[in-house]
Amino acid sequence: MLDQTTETGGYVTADGRTIGDVVMDLRNITLRFGGVEAIKNISFDIREGEIRAIIGPNGAGKSSMLNVISGFYVPQEGEVWFHGKKRAPLRPYEVARQGIARTFQNIALFEGMSVLDNVMTGRLNYMKANLFQQALWRGRAEAEETENREKVEHIIDFLEIQHIRKTPVARLPYGLKKRVELARALAAEPKLLLLDEPMAGMNVEEKEDMSRFILDVNDEFGTTIALIEHDMGVVMDLSDRVVVMDYGKKIGDGTPDEVRNNQEVIDAYLGVAHD
Image (cartoon, rainbow, N blue to C red; front, top):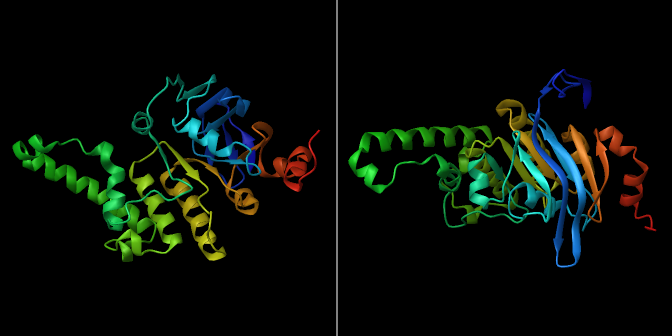
């Protein structure tokens, strides 16, 4: 919950966390697929250290917006600014190198690999030694491998999946797979972490666990998080600010309390007929 504004334009939350300057600024974003506008002239920002939610009914354009942020989609109109610089169209791996990592609604893990090996793939941008360098400077390559493994093991411990670290992902229940995917994204040490429906398909206990881990990641790592999620209760409990979309338009933006009391948002979720 927003408590007071700072001199830099950030804010201090009710629980004492300081939210900093703008990390990502989305300006007048319009995205079309053929003649269909999936996103219609939407602007909002994401600030350092906050948990920013994007919500809306099915078909609102949430996933399309997350794909714009992550570089999977390039909008026909508008600008994406990241850390004060206008972002040119980039391939997804180039966006990842800028410090943006994400999870997916449909889990995208290597099913035949162990949990440890899956999480290690999140360190690819930090693995600089090629095969020739490994042969020529074995000590440097080993030091790099040790550092990467230590960081991965820390994340595995942090997310409480050490007991399954050698288990093939294919043998895991759905909730643990979602946690492994979060671990892999964290291994990239992102400046901005994007979570695409992190609670989808989970039971109540799994949702409680994932909510706790998201809050812990934000608090302990200081990671800025943007997420889309259908569970309104979860969103209101987790988020510092919420932007609401409906039919590709922004219909609300503010704190959970402000959004909860926004009549246009209430109408969208209660299914009031559109004019």
